[in-house]
Length: 424
Picture 1 (cartoon, one colour):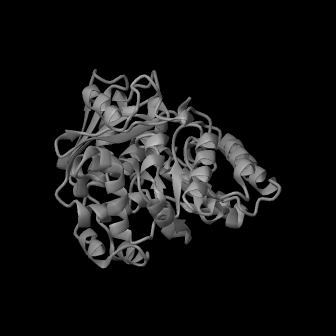
Picture 2 (cartoon, helix red, strand yellow; picture 1 turned 60 degrees about the vertical axis):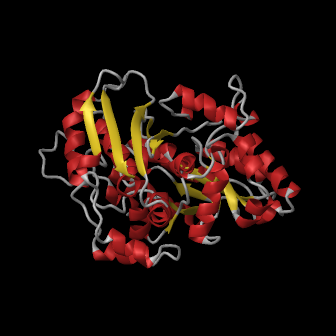
Picture 3 (tube, helix red, strand yellow; picture 1 turned 120 degrees about the vertical axis):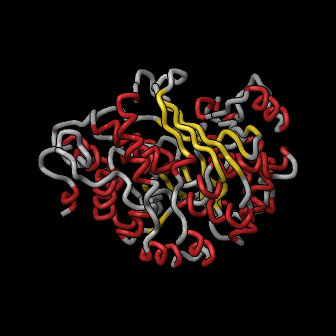
């Protein structure tokens, strides 16, 4: 039964403070992370093995105090740093066509090192804690997703709806019904992108199982490699913002950092994993850099900020102007999606270009309480500040306003204006 992941008294309650201890830890496998962490990590191993980076945690919710959970978070991270890849997981990764054998051999020796992450109480942040990650990029890149999942699940241990998850089940069933009842839905494909802000690991497992059983081919897969392996699904993902941000410090010239990042990605994957992230500097600089060469080389692009309708129209126009049939390319939408918004986008763009939709928090933390809007972003590489200039201003993150102003100047962005029309 698809309900087997839930118990009758309270659903996905692992490590509940009321349950008396002895339960599983939140993260039990280093595969329990997004695929793009591995694809970026392989690129780092081969292209940037000596890079040193720094990340910072941010909670965007107001009025959330995480200090009471500091001990639990640290205990979970202690356990995370004890994990290694068993042979069965290494064999799975080796079976992915784009993963190289030397990278798998490296992972066979890998574990996350506790000295590279600190979690302390701090009055400098509204949420009351400071999570800082600093060290070699190759040895810190896998912290982000499991640490965010730990913070989220620890928090919701203490904010757990005691109704057997009836509301979460009802909402999930309604979402699946809307997808199945959508007319002309042959090209409607939805993936799970929700590991980082999930309510709990068990709830994510339940949702993936239910959607896979219910939606069939409309459920394209999951970004979580652990669950992709467990359920025989397609692991989804290519690159994330941190990759292009790091290229600001690792490339030969700041203005060329975006094209440098795409070139190095193509050098690593030779045309595979060809979805370009479009919003590290905003839509205008992306379109300027994403010329005919990249339009033809990459399979498509991903939207993660700004107005997705404006972005999609701009991408279709851009492909046509660069002698590419838009119907041969893919647009992936992944910014704060829910099912109604997904269906609106699908209706607007269907039959004009290939489409895929990555839904995160609205699938994996929609059971009643307000989800945590938490992120861990790279803020420095090789001692130099790095930044993201998002089409959604509140999604940007940089600790050096002088550098941010300079970055905007280099990319020709008026400091008084949003990064692109998509953010107006």
